[in-house]
Amino acid sequence: MARVTVINDSSEFIDLMRELVTSLGHQMTGLEAVHTSIEEVVRTKPDLLLVDLRLENTPQEVSGWELVILDKAHHDLLSVPVILCTADVWELKKRAKDLEQIADVHVRTKPFQIDDMSELIERLLKASQAKRRSVRAKAAISQIPVDGGPPGPPPLRR
Image 1: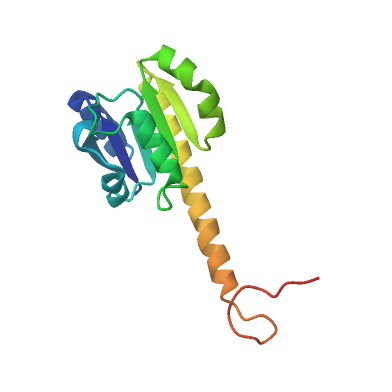
Image 2: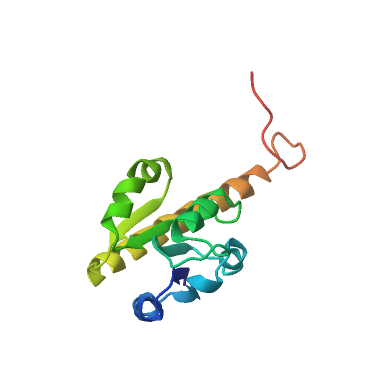
């Protein structure tokens, strides 16, 4: 069971996503934008983030776009895929070049098809789980002694 964190300023949207995510067999944490910080997102230990691009914000709060940037810069969230949702096509066009530069951010415009969102969530979670397994396998391999020596990374070869 994977953990999906949804950040939105609409409790109705959070409820809709909770119904969808739990029907897929995953846990979901919903964060209302008004109280969300990157530290709060990190505490949810997400396998997938779903963020509204246009969160209502005031000077002390973080916008959806800023959350995506902070997510991709945070060590604990760097490899977490993001689904960026918005009904604001103009804002998406404005951010298009920036989005091309950020890895693992997938855009869905509202309204979206539930089947399309379900498929995307499942695909991203499967890819994320495969990546984590690969990282764990590499870490385990690095602990195997090489040539009878102590555990650790293999020696450099010239």
